[in-house]
Image (cartoon, rainbow, N blue to C red; front, side, top):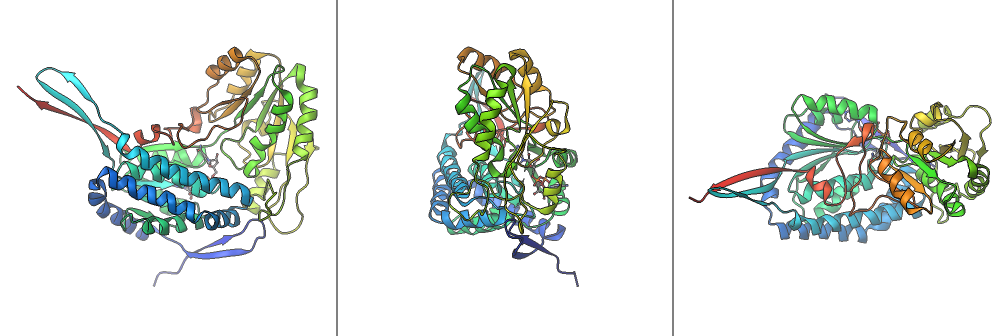
Length: 453
Ligand code: NAD
């Protein structure tokens, strides 16, 4: 008899176990792919308005069960409850968006001699969706929405540490009336379940979000079956503050651009680049603003930052801080994987500025002028996100065009919305999620010529 393997799920704020789940292996993965394959034939034929209706119902169910989903996510990831509510709110918006997109993903007719040429957007088949632990339900929805809208069926693998919201979402999928087999969730390790999905000949595409290191393995594994891949990977984004910016506003916002989700955010603006002529004034404001971040019990309404995901991850984060930092905030003692908000002065050559910390540690780096800011911001293998703070509109656009990154914001740190494309350049990955752009990653263009002469 096979030994029973389980995944123990822990609350990172208390270290208490909250679930002990059966762990899937290769056999269960193959069975889930087979279920998804069987469901595909009928799901792709569901009329567009009916598919839209089902996604609309799912969005409404997420709204109706929002508080429960937010509590699951807060408990499992250690997220402050207010932030978790916002994230679940976005999940509903994402499903509403893709419900509306189902019948607006048009083909074309192309003028040719002797007949009519037309294109169709065909679904790919079974898609494998592999997601990380930092925004579990959010990132799952960014992939599920367009995948289902295009008529694919899905095997979703949440991260081992945070499977609970995906399991609850799968129940809501069925409650919405989406047929059995269309969405399958597997709890299991990446190197077994994830890898099997990547190599499985009946999986047409992998939508992956995670580290650049694992993304590389996914890309290599997908080569065996020429599988399509979308890779949303790590980041080391720059928050570029020019001396002509509204410094108070930029400094008040900067801590939340890196300490939100305890820094476990691929878009974290973890390199704060400041023009030298404004450096001292900005750093003073930044330290004051960072002191104001409320770190503590995620169940408290006012909490802004919770713990890290695990003890092991806390060790990694701590390894980036040598000596006395520019500022170190307070964090609870005792149980829970706590780490305080930390600011360090650095050069762009330091490890803290080169590698993704994925924790509440920001590197503050001075620059001389616009050209220097662009050079430093681009001097990284990553290219996911970033911000530019200046009151000079022409400069803002000049710098935005020069930065090698997929998503940017000007005089703001917000760049993720259901209706706008999101994704990286360079080693932050390729392909776009969200907006109408994501539909391209979950469909294939078929060209058909009909002779009329
Ligand atoms: P990870 O790469 O360790 O794991 C991501 C997922 O891949 C998990 O579900 C894991 O089980 C699975 N996996 C692990 N090994 C695998 C393998 N060999 N084959 C297939 N799947 C495998 O990442 P993580 O630690 O869960 O998340 C943190 C990383 O995710 C950070 O680097 C962060 O920047 C990145 N991230 C990127 C985005 C984005 O949109 N660009 C968003 C969130 C997080």
